[in-house]
Image (cartoon, rainbow, N blue to C red):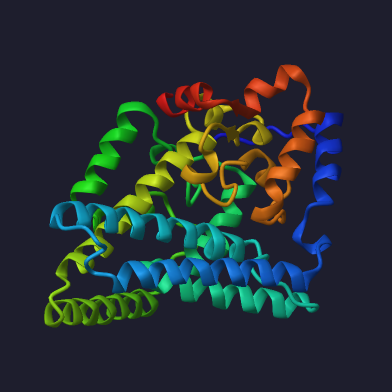
Length: 315
């Protein structure tokens, strides 16, 4: 395993101090919670509209399926960013008591992960913290080198996901896990998934909305495809091989960034620098940290523009 090289130049310490002012724990917790709950409400409303509106005002079944699959995939992707990822850093919801905050975030993380069949404690509560400690190494539970794809390897993996969406769970869990779930929890997850999607299929069959069911299933492949592109932008190519831990994460700022990588998820260097910055503050933190960063380090840590971002994805 590659050993981490710890270098703490003065500018990096200054950037960390500057970034801390944007931490969720420096914010008004009531306003913070309101932002996240209202955003989640909007996402769930979009999910309900996509689920219930089986016709989607489109005559072609194939086009309607494609539109709904993309909608489901995008919604799944946003839920991962907003709920699961923020909860893994104990900043989805915040209370005045740290222990209560941890319990609430763990509950929210688990509730969201149940739909996706992922063990929250293993992959997120423990696995994501391990990823932050030493990213893109063989024992990184989330972004080990074989799961940090660029170029042709990335396209091949996306092709598999679009052809066979259930492959997404194998793709997500491609790296060795720091915490091995017990067979009882794994069995419970599988049973829950079977009951959930079995019920979904039964309703779809009886209401003649199988297209919606198939689109919802296909959404898993689309969500993981977006996630793999995100990982490529964050840690792909030479970025993930840098011996300096702080240089193994990169931010990308490009045209349509807010649409393609929602909730500022592409502001990744800043997130690894201070992992308690909530999604809605990442852009402001990025602007301040970018200003502090020496000119010679900016090409190492930031993809500025669409062309630089595409080069990063190409590897």
